[in-house]
Image (tube, rainbow over all chains, first blue to last red; front, side, top):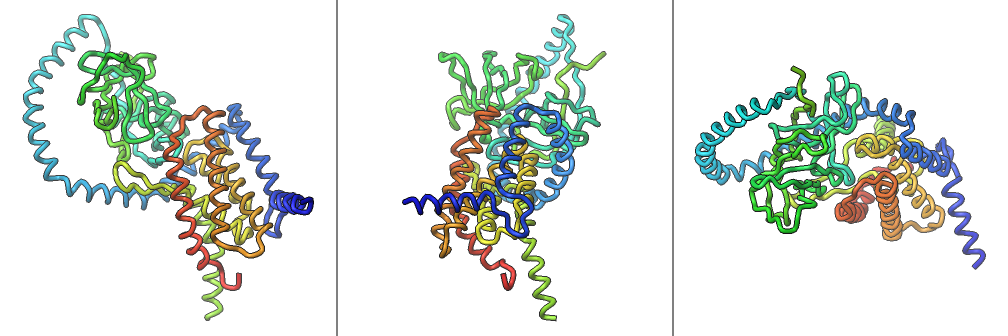
Amino acid sequence: MASGRDDFIIAVRSAFLKKSNKQQFSLLALIIFSVFLIFLSNLNFIGIKYLKTGINEATYRLSALISYPEKKLNDTIVFFKEYFIVYEENQNLKNQIDKLNNERLNYIFLENENKRLKEIVGENSSFIDGVVSRVLIDKDGKFLKSIILNKGSKDGIKIGMVVLEKNYLVGQVIEVNFTTSRAILISDLNSNIPVVIEPGSFQSILSGTGKDYGKIKYSKNEIKFKDNDIVYTSGSGGNFRAGLPIGKIDNQIEKFGVQFFSDLSQLSYVKIQSIAPAEE
Amino acid sequence: MVQKKINLKNKFLKYFPLILLYFSVLNEFDIDVSNDWLISFNLPFIIIFYWSLKDPDQIGNGLIFISGILNDVTLGYPIGISSFIYLTIIAFAAYLRNITLRPNIYKDSVVFLVAILFANSVNALILGFIFSIEINFFEIITNITFTYVLYFLFAKIFNYLKPVGA
């Protein structure tokens, strides 16, 4: 019994402390050092921030280069998938065009009316056009859904700016380096966006699910959202400006699920915008 | 001439695990099977466990530590987490190496399963409780399952990739 315990202790001690000829560091020393780094990361130690920013620039570029073949392969697979469904999609699009043409006239009227009303109440609705950025890496990590963009602080990017694709909200900038930045996607589990659901103007919170759709949270029980109700940012809290389209309700995925307008796995170019109104 | 070829091949095989490790931490392997299913597996875990078990001199602990830092930067995690996780995998492999007289892939795979379960649990605990990052547990379980299953395949491949005379 004692011998078995001794063997265990010897094996563990050897695993943690013994260095072979070519090893520079013992396992225990490196474990202690990594725990120390985690501790400093948790405290937001300034040195760790500089270290991270320093490594970020080189790593993002290298990672983008290495991910290029995989990205191209995925693009090719998507291309062939889309090719096979093109006929059915064409029929649907024709129907949609007819419907949209009818709605367009109504929309033009409403837009003009909206402009007139905004002039009456004195609201400035012009916003900075934004910076177009290429998606360097769209890593689908187990713990974080984020994208790396090729624009950074030298292009005027700041933390909190919104990321759009074809005017649809896809994320928000959470980390800025000199020439690159990272944006968290709206599909991330940690993403919570104040939204308004039309028709009805119901205020709620849209949360990411970690998958390719979102979910409406914290709505009153008696409200029943219907399929194809549109989800916009509400502007509450000041983190997003109001009226950015995000997606539509799809109760087929799950109750109060939200199908995003943008395909978050296929982002190539995005627009980064400030949430602040432009100065006149 | 033949000796030269063997030397060249040995040189390539010597650095292959290291190149593959750095390639995989900078480009996490995810295979999108359909819209609802995402097969993802953790190749760095397999590489680190296998080579720490079979030939620890092939990839140094320090280089594995640095690869963890790069993984944190690439995926946007707090610095130090992946390094710590990779080092725990090495610890399991080193312990198994010390107590094993006759290596067997099935015994190795059992310890590998325990190692990746432990590593992912610690990872989830650190991210969830210390850094308050929400986690999709189903995705982690899927990742662990595929990592474990693919260990057998990669172990077979790596067996052929050992330098001549090693």
